[in-house]
Length: 278
Image 1 (cartoon, one colour):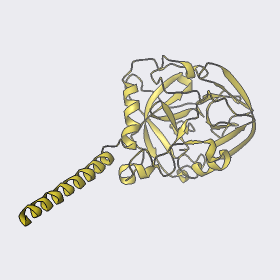
Image 2 (spheres, one colour):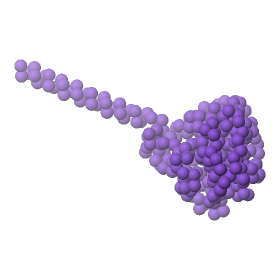
Image 3 (cartoon, rainbow, N blue to C red):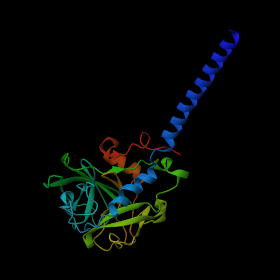
């Protein structure tokens, strides 16, 4: 009887240990196989880039243009400034982000929603730092206009080695060429790199069917986006002919935007519950 009891005890011990190991292995597997931020930023836009659809667009119809290669990414946030017809982007329900030179947004902002309805909303106040301007609108844009995502300022916690976004794919709406063009992040640097404009990110052009060129006069304010799913994630708006701008997820710009727009009015992406940290 003692021998039988010992054998039963041993079997139960081994079985319990085996189950514990199984649970532990399952937990580790679920973490290590979760899609990383880096792979997610790459995967959607890489798939979109295989499409041979046109890159040609018009700012006030791009929200409903199913022919462009970036479709179904929702670009209803992109609109036109009263001042000089520059492109800019709705960053909060009542806030527009643009460049801060040549008058910025001006007195009003015009956009088209996902139903093809055009809206023009006057500007009540503007705030600028370096070459980034926030224009506050007198009323909210309709819910049928998508607010683009923004990476949180601690996004590097979700990149292996806490690195940067260099060589990650993005696209920009090249106003002067009327083309949506594929680019990669070419450089990231401190805001003090450029004493005049305070630029913190620049792009590098790519080849292929959707590759493009650098900006020229009149392209200021045009947005550069990453993509997650069908959501555009704003990187910056165009500032210089070298393809540079003020990266919205880097300080001092991230803090400045929050102070003027309000965190609750921004679409800051939740990294903690979505991607593994490093």
